[in-house]
Length: 199
Image (cartoon, rainbow, N blue to C red; front, side, top):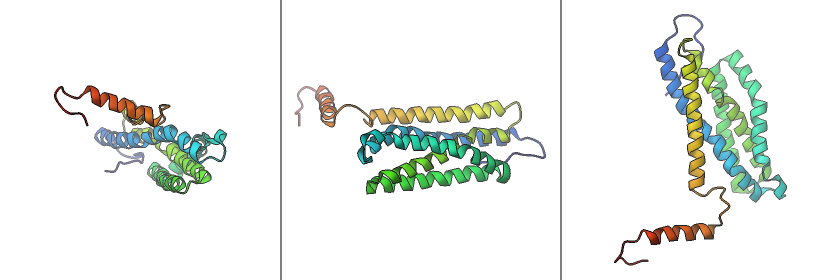
């Protein structure tokens, strides 16, 4: 699926195309929005393991926020001079680079490489935060607000579901693995039917 991410400068505005673009960009925003939630949830844990000092554990999150700050104006510049599609695709390239660098950093145990990866993730976040504006580019004045709202709402729902998944899977939990295992065993014991054998 692809969306038209360039404003229509001449001709009639097509609300059908705007609805399609809003749907495609809402899905893209929802998937991209989970990136920030997962990064914030796990980067400090990984940072605590990889950092030379425990006081630097949350530095990867700071690097991501710094990347968003640094990337915001260049995304606008690229959108103005080369088109919004090019700007958003460039941001997506940084998302791929972020994943590759961060994975390599964790596999090699390199904290400083992890910072570079989360910084690139911030550049990606700067681009995907403007998907809502691309959704309004092809919409009429009557439907532009709805397109923006749909795209923004999808990001919030995806972020909420990603954080719920992280909590359900125990990421970032203060409960030790032993206590978590005992809780799971306790749940299984309660669910055993009478007359059946326990393992």
